[in-house]
Amino acid sequence: MKSQLIVETPTHKWIYFGRDPEKPEKIIDTNQYMLVTDKKALLMDPGGVELFAPMLANIVKHIPLEQLTHLFASHQDPDIISSLGLWDQTLPGAKLYSPWLWEGFIRHFGMSNITYEPIPDEGSRLVLDQVEIQLIPAHYLHSSGNMHVYDPAARVLMCGDVGAALEDHDVDIFVDDFEAHTKKMKFFHQRWMPSNRAKNEWIERVRKLDIDFMCPQHGRIFRGEQVTQFLDWFEQLDVGKTG
Amino acid sequence: MSRKRTQVSQYYVIAAVVAAELNHTLTYCKQINLTASNAQAASSRVGNAALGFKALTGFIDDLACYTMKAATDINILAHKASKLATDTARAATALKHFEKAKKNAREAKFASTIAPAVEKTSQNYQQLQHSFQHLINQMEVQLHELKRNLRTANILASICRIEACRVDVANQATFNDVANRVDNVANLIRQRVDNAIALFDGSSGQEAA
Figure (tube, rainbow over the protein chains, first blue to last red):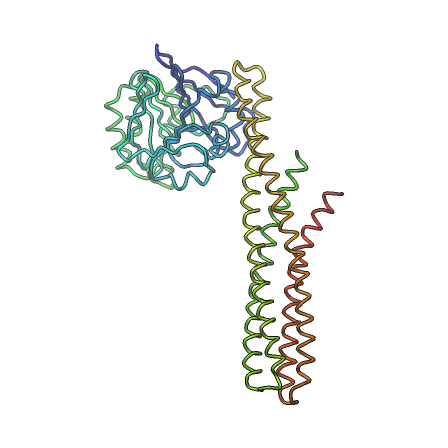
């Protein structure tokens, strides 16, 4: 599994994990992100059971395990958080931030030690050491209870399934040719995103944010102008289509 | 540890099957209860000649109640065992993943920080294994005890037949029918209990092999 520093500020850094060459062939490739502050760390969309061991092995390359104090699950899907039962035995004192809507469902993955911190529909804030991040709503994109993470200091948006692309696991982690990349995103967004109204509300919300890095859970990271390019492309895309 | 894991996964299934087998015995116990009530009514109709038989119906009823309680108790143990097996399997899975992570993290700067989680999960696993084994042993003992007590049913059925001889021919058929029912239902229960015991024996055989 690859792990790479995305951005570093005087107070914290964002690290990318993904492109695991040993991943079983038929499971979808996923990106995981970790925000590391002075004494704490937040692991976002930790991934499925199959990814647990490579994730654990890669995390300890960057931080001691006891520093990993917070988990975030944007929604309830297995590729997002089915590893919870294993994290529960690894980090018994950790807190899991996830939409309130999914608590009863996510607990099915096995959770007897970690504390569930339900995120209200309108979103909330989370402070790690002196770093404050925002948990912003992304409902129906694609899950009916869905949250993204925005870090105003590092100008990073962890955008879950929005911006996802379906492609091989050994490609670069950053988008190079935006136009070419749209071909890999179109089907995913049209099929998995159910609502044009939810999409447009999210775009309106996100356009107000200052974003340098937009980090989806599948595919590649958008940088700089590519963020606006993506929002424009997504705005004109008709979603909720099977054909 | 892999042998123990196999053992747990076998017992996982066994606990569920034992619970299913004992569930059947509860239905049979209700049949014995009903038979005892019918026998009591019949002996009241017959009068003094059936006094001995009437006393027996109380024992039949007691046997049904005992069997029902024993089956329910073993069922509770089976459900506990299933839950413990799930927790044990979960801990075993975590240990397997930890091993993989430790292997891949050999060169990692903070590799040693995985150790406390491994240690704690390993202790938890041992404790779960111990509790699980204890529960399984308890189930096996109680199944054998239930089987032993079921012998009483045959004795009661035999005494019923003897008592049937004391009443007039017209009522003998009714009392013999009660004896046959007690015998039949007890055999059905014994069969279910034997099935449950055989599951444990089979798994011990496999382990030895």
